[in-house]
Image (cartoon, helix red, strand yellow):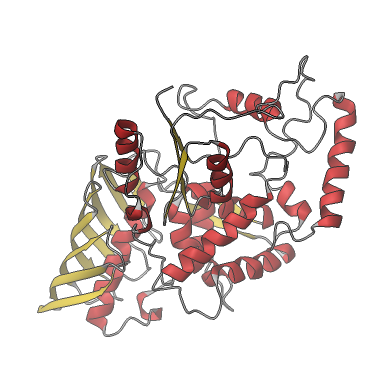
Length: 433
């Protein structure tokens, strides 16, 4: 074998059937995203604090209501404790969840709750329908691998009828030995959440021959190996990635800041993909310092029903910032869309096209209820450049037209807005949304 690249690696020779490290990674990831975001760092309540507070609220009463998914399809959705676990763990593959969950939870925890942003995230995230084309992802293969190769909370060689009791004993033992393993969630809440699979193999046939994925005493090859993990990935945690790298005697481990699960495949010639290509050519990762230089995820500052509830300065500045927030909200939906038409948080529609260079056409899109935004957005995913030309109207805005721009790859990115509002030329600079 010439070389080996593991992007989003996990140590299959581990012995923990509950993968407690994924919860540690989840808490770390929400701490990192808050600490690194201008709109979140320094708040008295961290994102992890909010997850704990919302968990307590949901134990008393789940939150239900109608909300659109990224394609604008509206239906009833409920967020209970299991749903919140779904959201927090799904963030490992969804920058949009990291971007919006903090503000959505704060909105839901207000004395007069505003639940639509949280319900929309749930509507976009909850798994529905089939698994998709089997050539892209096979659920059957996943279950077969999990049930035959992964550590399980029962003895896979036991008869099927004996496994439930063994599984209960393992859960009870974990609750006695380490009750805070899945803080802020209880052991029971975590293992019974709809996104978890701890009991999926209970009825899997007893293997005729049990061959461990990594037999005891196995040695790993001296093949040049690159292990690369995003530091916001709680699906295959950085902790698991480091263990994987340590197992290979000729390995390099690279942790990529501010990235989620699988870093190099879609970053359009940014650092991770360059490191991989260089490693494949030369068998050395070379200078990997750029892995620490990815821009932070910009968290939504707050969600409000109307523009007048936002403390964003004068009417004209507030209009520009609401227009930019609407643009950013539309772009965030793109990552979860199944089609080419979507809807604003509070109404209006947009259409999208393109892959490397993406364009949206907005028709009265409302991020807040009293401001309507129409026009065009262009996002060059090969450079990070975002540009928008939009018209703004509504009782919460100074009507007019704005040209907006910022670069999605910039650290602490600044947005510029120029044009005419209320018949007067304007020009603003403010933190990019």
